[in-house]
Image (tube, rainbow, N blue to C red; front, side, top):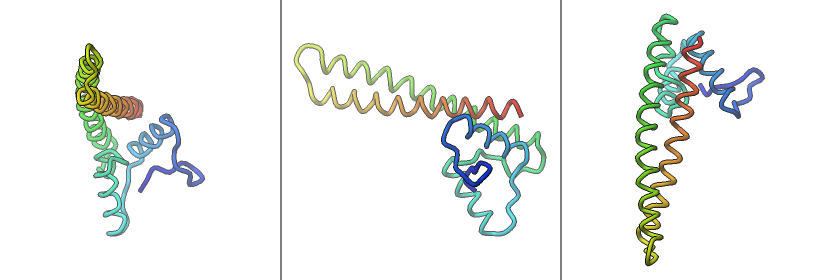
Length: 134
């Protein structure tokens, strides 16, 4: 149940992924057998498809998927901002004065995790915009 574009290719840019998610919310997903149902459940857990794409009506699909993406946006955005700020502080302290390898490595790790989290928040925001346009 991965997001496939016409022709069977997987999306390679954020806009194509947002279009695929908007199409899933608009048209819905109706698993035909137990294997498809398990695949949809696995895709939901992995975050490949938003929650609610198998709901009965478009309004319900839009509400569930939009709220799930909004929650992801808030969760990853706040977490990412905090990690970036604390990572920068640890890097500054690790580099200031005598070089401290422990503080520098903690700061670098926090900064990398913060950047990844902000990237996920950006993706959730793009998906939320696509869902709200449906």
